[in-house]
Image (cartoon, rainbow, N blue to C red; front, side, top):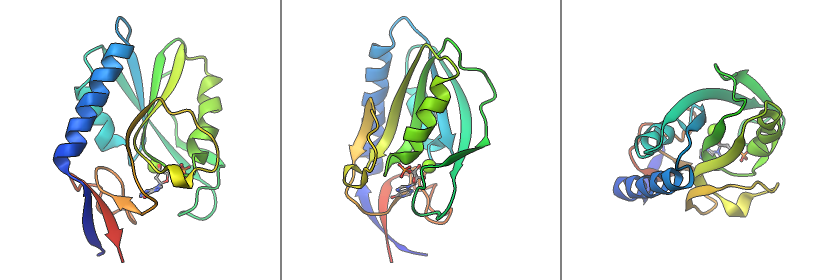
Length: 172
Ligand code: IMP
Ligand code: MG
Protein backbone atom coordinates (compact mmCIF):
# COMPACT_ATOMS: atom_id res chain seq x y z
CA UNK A 1 0.00 0.00 0.00
CA UNK A 2 1.13 3.55 -0.71
CA UNK A 3 1.89 6.21 1.88
CA UNK A 4 -1.01 8.69 2.12
CA UNK A 5 -0.38 12.36 2.87
CA UNK A 6 -3.44 14.38 3.87
CA UNK A 7 -4.20 17.18 1.42
CA UNK A 8 -7.71 18.27 2.42
CA UNK A 9 -9.07 17.32 5.84
CA UNK A 10 -12.40 15.60 6.40
CA UNK A 11 -13.70 18.74 8.10
CA UNK A 12 -12.77 20.99 5.16
CA UNK A 13 -14.30 18.59 2.62
CA UNK A 14 -17.55 18.40 4.55
CA UNK A 15 -17.69 22.18 5.03
CA UNK A 16 -17.19 22.74 1.32
CA UNK A 17 -19.84 20.18 0.37
CA UNK A 18 -22.31 21.95 2.66
CA UNK A 19 -21.51 25.25 0.90
CA UNK A 20 -21.96 23.65 -2.51
CA UNK A 21 -25.28 22.15 -1.42
CA UNK A 22 -26.48 25.55 -0.22
CA UNK A 23 -25.48 27.20 -3.50
CA UNK A 24 -27.18 24.49 -5.57
CA UNK A 25 -30.33 24.79 -3.44
CA UNK A 26 -30.35 28.54 -4.13
CA UNK A 27 -29.72 28.15 -7.86
CA UNK A 28 -32.43 25.50 -8.27
CA UNK A 29 -34.99 27.18 -5.99
CA UNK A 30 -38.52 26.20 -7.05
CA UNK A 31 -37.21 23.31 -9.14
CA UNK A 32 -36.21 19.71 -8.66
CA UNK A 33 -32.67 18.57 -9.30
CA UNK A 34 -31.79 15.20 -10.82
CA UNK A 35 -28.29 14.13 -9.84
CA UNK A 36 -26.32 11.80 -12.08
CA UNK A 37 -23.42 10.31 -10.18
CA UNK A 38 -20.66 8.77 -12.25
CA UNK A 39 -19.67 5.42 -10.72
CA UNK A 40 -17.77 4.61 -8.73
CA UNK A 41 -15.68 7.58 -7.64
CA UNK A 42 -18.36 10.22 -7.28
CA UNK A 43 -20.75 8.17 -5.15
CA UNK A 44 -19.35 9.26 -1.78
CA UNK A 45 -19.47 12.92 -2.78
CA UNK A 46 -22.89 12.63 -4.45
CA UNK A 47 -24.47 11.18 -1.30
CA UNK A 48 -23.03 13.89 0.96
CA UNK A 49 -24.02 16.58 -1.52
CA UNK A 50 -27.57 15.23 -1.89
CA UNK A 51 -28.02 15.46 1.89
CA UNK A 52 -27.12 19.18 1.76
CA UNK A 53 -29.55 20.09 -1.02
CA UNK A 54 -32.86 21.41 0.22
CA UNK A 55 -34.88 21.33 -3.04
CA UNK A 56 -36.32 17.94 -4.07
CA UNK A 57 -33.57 15.59 -5.27
CA UNK A 58 -33.61 12.43 -7.33
CA UNK A 59 -30.49 10.47 -8.12
CA UNK A 60 -29.37 8.04 -10.79
CA UNK A 61 -26.05 6.39 -11.60
CA UNK A 62 -24.03 5.80 -14.70
CA UNK A 63 -20.80 3.93 -15.19
CA UNK A 64 -18.45 4.93 -17.96
CA UNK A 65 -15.15 3.51 -19.04
CA UNK A 66 -12.69 5.03 -21.43
CA UNK A 67 -10.91 2.86 -23.93
CA UNK A 68 -7.18 2.38 -23.84
CA UNK A 69 -4.64 3.07 -21.10
CA UNK A 70 -6.38 3.22 -17.74
CA UNK A 71 -4.37 6.09 -16.23
CA UNK A 72 -4.82 8.39 -19.19
CA UNK A 73 -8.28 9.26 -20.37
CA UNK A 74 -8.63 8.44 -24.08
CA UNK A 75 -11.68 10.62 -24.45
CA UNK A 76 -13.62 7.80 -26.06
CA UNK A 77 -16.19 6.97 -23.46
CA UNK A 78 -18.16 3.77 -23.40
CA UNK A 79 -21.28 3.49 -21.24
CA UNK A 80 -20.70 0.44 -19.06
CA UNK A 81 -23.92 0.96 -17.11
CA UNK A 82 -26.55 3.34 -18.39
CA UNK A 83 -29.03 5.39 -16.36
CA UNK A 84 -32.13 3.62 -15.05
CA UNK A 85 -34.44 6.54 -15.85
CA UNK A 86 -34.95 8.95 -18.75
CA UNK A 87 -33.70 12.50 -18.20
CA UNK A 88 -35.99 14.25 -20.65
CA UNK A 89 -37.30 17.51 -19.20
CA UNK A 90 -35.25 17.18 -16.00
CA UNK A 91 -32.83 19.65 -14.42
CA UNK A 92 -29.78 17.42 -14.58
CA UNK A 93 -26.65 17.89 -12.52
CA UNK A 94 -23.82 15.52 -13.38
CA UNK A 95 -21.70 14.80 -10.32
CA UNK A 96 -18.03 13.87 -10.77
CA UNK A 97 -15.25 13.11 -8.31
CA UNK A 98 -12.48 14.83 -10.25
CA UNK A 99 -11.96 16.51 -13.60
CA UNK A 100 -8.54 15.88 -14.97
CA UNK A 101 -8.08 16.09 -18.77
CA UNK A 102 -11.79 16.92 -19.11
CA UNK A 103 -12.20 14.31 -21.83
CA UNK A 104 -14.72 12.13 -20.01
CA UNK A 105 -17.20 14.94 -19.40
CA UNK A 106 -16.50 16.52 -22.75
CA UNK A 107 -17.62 13.30 -24.36
CA UNK A 108 -20.46 12.53 -21.96
CA UNK A 109 -22.13 15.94 -22.08
CA UNK A 110 -23.38 15.84 -25.72
CA UNK A 111 -24.48 12.24 -25.20
CA UNK A 112 -26.70 13.30 -22.31
CA UNK A 113 -27.82 16.51 -24.02
CA UNK A 114 -29.23 14.44 -26.90
CA UNK A 115 -31.70 12.92 -24.42
CA UNK A 116 -33.42 16.28 -23.99
CA UNK A 117 -32.94 17.38 -20.35
CA UNK A 118 -34.40 20.78 -19.37
CA UNK A 119 -30.86 21.74 -18.32
CA UNK A 120 -27.53 20.03 -17.83
CA UNK A 121 -24.82 21.33 -15.51
CA UNK A 122 -21.64 19.83 -14.14
CA UNK A 123 -20.47 19.58 -10.56
CA UNK A 124 -17.16 18.15 -9.34
CA UNK A 125 -15.58 17.74 -5.93
CA UNK A 126 -12.07 18.18 -7.28
CA UNK A 127 -10.56 19.89 -10.29
CA UNK A 128 -7.01 19.63 -11.66
CA UNK A 129 -6.77 22.74 -13.88
CA UNK A 130 -3.14 22.09 -14.86
CA UNK A 131 -4.11 18.84 -16.54
CA UNK A 132 -6.97 20.15 -18.65
CA UNK A 133 -6.76 19.20 -22.34
CA UNK A 134 -10.27 20.00 -23.51
CA UNK A 135 -12.48 22.79 -22.31
CA UNK A 136 -15.42 21.81 -20.09
CA UNK A 137 -17.82 24.24 -18.54
CA UNK A 138 -18.07 23.20 -14.88
CA UNK A 139 -20.61 25.10 -12.82
CA UNK A 140 -19.70 23.85 -9.33
CA UNK A 141 -16.15 23.03 -8.21
CA UNK A 142 -15.28 21.95 -4.68
CA UNK A 143 -11.52 22.41 -4.73
CA UNK A 144 -8.75 22.97 -7.25
CA UNK A 145 -5.95 20.50 -6.55
CA UNK A 146 -2.36 20.41 -7.79
CA UNK A 147 -1.20 17.92 -10.41
CA UNK A 148 -0.73 15.00 -8.00
CA UNK A 149 -2.51 11.67 -7.78
CA UNK A 150 -5.20 12.08 -5.15
CA UNK A 151 -7.24 9.45 -3.32
CA UNK A 152 -10.01 9.28 -0.74
CA UNK A 153 -13.61 10.42 -0.58
CA UNK A 154 -14.42 8.04 -3.42
CA UNK A 155 -11.22 8.45 -5.42
CA UNK A 156 -9.14 5.32 -5.81
CA UNK A 157 -5.69 4.13 -6.56
CA UNK A 158 -6.13 0.65 -8.12
CA UNK A 159 -9.55 0.44 -6.37
CA UNK A 160 -8.09 1.17 -2.92
CA UNK A 161 -8.56 4.14 -0.56
CA UNK A 162 -12.06 5.12 -1.74
CA UNK A 163 -13.25 4.90 1.87
CA UNK A 164 -10.80 7.46 3.31
CA UNK A 165 -12.89 10.28 4.81
CA UNK A 166 -10.37 12.92 3.64
CA UNK A 167 -8.50 13.72 0.41
CA UNK A 168 -4.92 12.54 0.36
CA UNK A 169 -1.99 12.20 -2.02
CA UNK A 170 -0.78 8.68 -2.74
CA UNK A 171 3.00 8.71 -2.51
CA UNK A 172 5.07 5.85 -3.90
P1 IMP B 1 -10.70 13.00 -17.33
O1 IMP B 1 -11.17 14.33 -16.83
O2 IMP B 1 -11.47 12.47 -18.49
O3 IMP B 1 -9.21 12.99 -17.60
O4 IMP B 1 -10.89 11.87 -16.26
C1 IMP B 1 -11.32 12.03 -15.00
C2 IMP B 1 -11.32 10.67 -14.33
O5 IMP B 1 -9.96 10.19 -14.16
C3 IMP B 1 -11.89 10.78 -12.94
O6 IMP B 1 -13.29 10.50 -12.93
C4 IMP B 1 -11.10 9.73 -12.17
O7 IMP B 1 -11.72 8.47 -12.27
C5 IMP B 1 -9.76 9.65 -12.86
N1 IMP B 1 -8.72 10.46 -12.17
C6 IMP B 1 -8.08 11.55 -12.65
N2 IMP B 1 -7.20 12.03 -11.77
C7 IMP B 1 -7.28 11.23 -10.68
C8 IMP B 1 -6.61 11.25 -9.40
O8 IMP B 1 -5.74 12.08 -9.06
N3 IMP B 1 -6.97 10.27 -8.53
C9 IMP B 1 -7.90 9.32 -8.83
N4 IMP B 1 -8.56 9.28 -10.00
C10 IMP B 1 -8.25 10.23 -10.93
MG1 MG C 1 -14.20 8.68 -12.30
